[in-house]
Picture 1: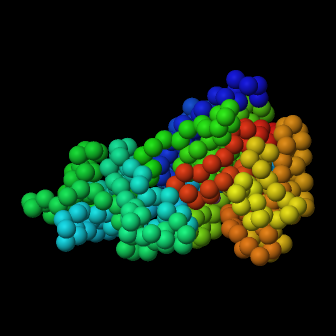
Picture 2: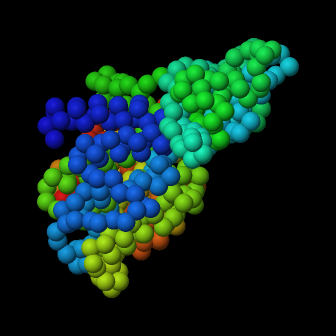
Picture 3: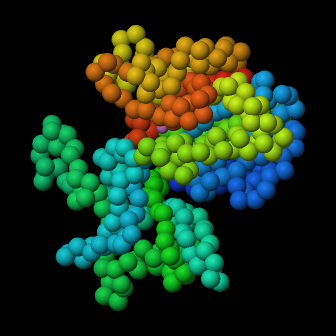
Length: 434
Ligand code: CO
């Protein structure tokens, strides 16, 4: 990629992060990108009729998506090349019974924590709301995505005067008591739950009487930006893991223009809560889709299993860069830095699915693309995280390499990464898929 293309890619990436405040919006925006690149939508509930050289995508729950290209080569002997990522991220989800009123007349929003949030980062920031609403329309169930991109909610900190030791002892927040955002002051003629439903009605045009249920999440109103001395960093919400979703999507759409092969990009919801949902990585969504592709093209069971055995995959999820103030949190020898390139994640206990073989095919792709790469292993006394790699790999029996761009402030409301790591990752993905 030349400098102009790098800049365009980075700006589009930032736009994608900013425009996708929930997994539903991440998938909807992915669909738009795929359609612009001549990918055709399939419905799981309808019959498929795939063509050699075709480009397709299918969604599940509107929060997970699999895009794929059909090759004109022999998939049984050459297999699929697969890139996986996740569409969800930690945040605050609005509960049923969405509002609560304090004796002082404050109306607060009743939220629960989704995933591993750093709660302190949600305080003192204007918050907006987005998600999906299920409603009845002419006796049928319809769903609609909503995004009320306005600074409506706020979780104010307790002042320092009432907690003089806060800087020495650190923040300690009770997930029930301390994190309800303020919405407005109580009004005498408004039913409790209507404070939120009225807002949805006003902003989305959906009549509150038609709303049966909703999945609504708060997000930071302030948009992501490029920062740093030379604008070499990205400060934005949802870098983990929408940056990897965007890199995977871009690589697939570009690789599709360079010859017809069997390639898959899969992005799953619910990684942050363990993946065991119908649309999560720990579901049949990927393996069913692969089976369906092969059967649709007339392959036998034997040929399908042969194709699986000849496939490889990349599990793309943000990695931990060495922190400038907490360098001791890392292994002494494996110390990825911001801007140093995509990072391969290893774990002897297989919390990451990387093997020497899978690492090697990713390193080869990096070398072909002319991009650097780095390696990450936890310190032995830190458990660390996990990701979709081991899950996908065990369900499909396809080898996987766990990798990601190294970032800081993972699971903060605003994460921090390097522009070039995303460029490098996209180039490596493209080399792998081509
Ligand atoms: Co992640």
